[in-house]
Length: 253
Ligand SMILES: Nc1ncnc2c1ncn2[C@@H]1O[C@H](COP(=O)(O)OP(=O)(O)OP(=O)(O)O)[C@@H](O)[C@H]1O
Image (cartoon, rainbow, N blue to C red; front, side, top):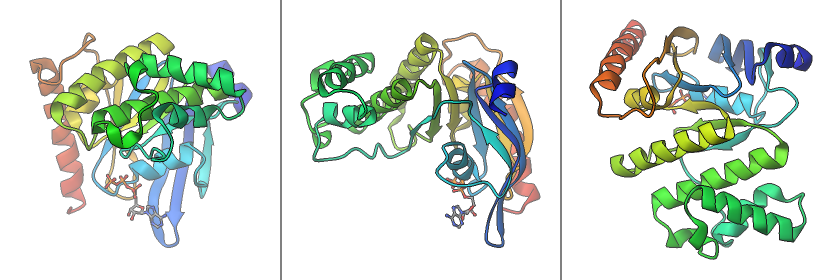
């Protein structure tokens, strides 16, 4: 499977993936790929299995049917909650992702990743001294460190900006887009926010209500950088929202 992936140049491949929790079927034959350097956003009604799908790709849980491949390398994951260790400094939190490296190198690389997310002056601070947006930047720096440590370029993001105010979210969209391009990352990004998906994605994939199946894909052919409040983003977001509403209505929730 890995050799095939390299040949096909695919960063993440799900082939007819199903996941059941006892009698509850969460995902039903989901096939989905992320090309190298592609930014794919995953949308769907609450409970349709988006987080389940990401945790399967991350290897945190096992499929009950089908197959997933992410090539030879691991993936990095970022959640809605930054999940930082409060007793460690900001730098210490980023260093945790590079435990295999000697201490000096770890510290130097952590400083570099904190620079990338514009937190170069905050390495010695503790997480509680930072704002919510800054904590998510630390989490992003840690995910980048994890990618570097694994030699991987696949970033899985589960509503990473869902808890932030609109202004901070906008700034982080710009940051993430810059980092994604500079580092040629492949991103699979889960969100409830249709405009956010259109702002960021090369492609938006719509999952059905539970059990999650891929019902529709929307290529986003708008020039970058995009603005969340632009007319073009609003128009495509409106079309996707209509499909999402139809999907939710079909399942009565
Ligand atoms: N560990 C688990 N054990 C049992 N059921 C689970 C488990 N994890 C998820 N589920 C169920 O699987 C379904 C999909 O859950 P999941 O969290 O993946 O959905 P989601 O689309 O991410 O939801 P939301 O958008 O609300 O975050 C839900 O019905 C949920 O209750």
